[in-house]
Amino acid sequence: MKRLKFILLLFVVIGLSNCSNSDDSDDDQNTDNFAELILGSWQPTSVLLNGAPEEGPCVLDWRFTYNNDGTYGSGRGGMGICGGLGGTGLYEVTGNRVLLNSAMGDVNFEYIIQTLNEDTFIYEERILTEGFPDNVRLFTCEKIEE
Image 1 (spheres, rainbow, N blue to C red):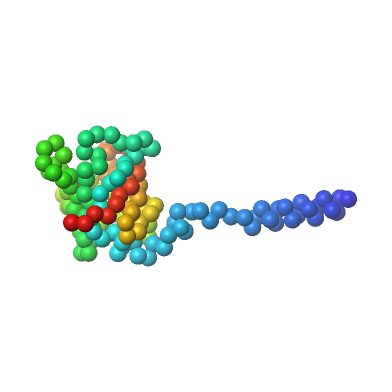
Image 2: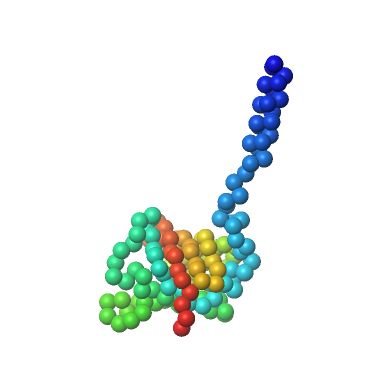
């Protein structure tokens, strides 16, 4: 009887050790073509700030454009309260991460890509520059035609 219990326990342990969580975000998507997929213009459809919906009149009015030469531009469309803000700089895609360096050298960002395909770009944004709040924004963006 002890031997039967031992064998059953052994099967359970072996069975559990062979189970793994293959739901890691890095494994879900091939990152080899992220440098190509990011090219073009994107507009947020939702933004979460530290897990809660970010609110305000201009939150979804941003446009982000990534160019073939490693430069980016960001800005808010239209006139009035939402118009005129933005910036430019350089970006580099490495695996599922995008590093952005402002042309003015004042703010640097890191994006951790969760999903990137022809139509959808979902990423966490972190500000790497000292003195800024340690906030995490989760952007869900759609590709836009210019």
